[in-house]
Length: 568
Image (cartoon, rainbow, N blue to C red):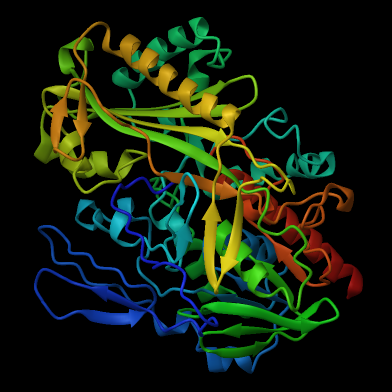
């Protein structure tokens, strides 16, 4: 999935405690609104945020869309899904499309926060893009594990919407049977997400987009590290913006499909504010899940881990007395990142509209000899900030950072947001592999970049500079310096301290390869635990993984429902 890119993440895990691990404490979310100094609390991690210039109230889902933990304990389910984010929504809706009466329970660690993607709700909600993040783990390697969004909908509440489809070459180190199966699900995944090129979203992706696209295409033909598409249009960023009944598009978030399923499916339940602590069972079969609300007997249900990579891996490692974790936690792969904002005088681009904003969104693929990388290049041009701010906010792929809405609506410049991601490769079960571990019940991430990883990051930065030189046409370029909060002619650092799109720690494959899960994603040594999301990826490139996660979720829903039909 697309990363959280705000530089405002705060580590909230103290150094490893001594002595025996204590039971995970009840966590509190504290929210401060501008009209009140009294914190309001509900369960989950400690967060502090204040809206800027607007009074904001935490939204509450209708009670009929969720059930209590006590009610769920009295029911029997076909599937118990851990996690209420994008992969959970893809799996649930895939099952319900085949069998509308399927009995499904989703256990979500957080509460209900928003009814849609934060950019669909207007710029007043923008501070939530960083404030809704939490970091319930520790990092001890060269890069930190990125934050989670612990609310129903997960990271899809704030993501960029980027949904590139990896080629078979991108997946060349995946088991062939999985890649063949994915060919049956790409179209289904694109349709569900509303995937479309940026130019089909709105008329605002017009002259500026075409000018930038043509210049980037020219650079790609001359730079051996950039993959040259067959035609410039293939540089259009693929974005997830499904249409509503009126034909209007909005940025995809999993919260919509989940709440629709909760209101329409007769046997689909959601329990929120329920943190799963451990899996319990015997002889490889999980029979109970231990949660912050108590123990849940799952009966004969299939248990679906639709959690983020760090969360799923931590849960498996905490459950080693019940499940054979094997090499769980190794093979950690991710993306290093260089993010920055810059501006070029408006007159460096001809024929830009003054009647409304002009936007651009490009996806540029690159590769070194051993690694992959890519660049997202987004841009805004406007002559009237007050008129265009809301429209720009709703359509731009990336609007992270509290200052971003004001900065990108510069009436005298074209402002570019450049996000580059480079591959950090996993190393399977090798002893020197980057990994996720458990230390006194705390999840710990350890990233170690090798020479090839570092070379890819260097190449990414070099390509970004070459692209900007061509885009500016010789005009001056200024960069936003976050620390001094000023525009400068040279940026000292663009590299982020976080590793994004973490994957691979519960990877799929055959047993001889040391894979933690089989080619269906079933945890080895377990008869009823399946892993979805990035944790199950055999390898990682640089492409945004969410479309692939959705396709894998639909693949598993088909596989398990076919088994259900056979077993009767």
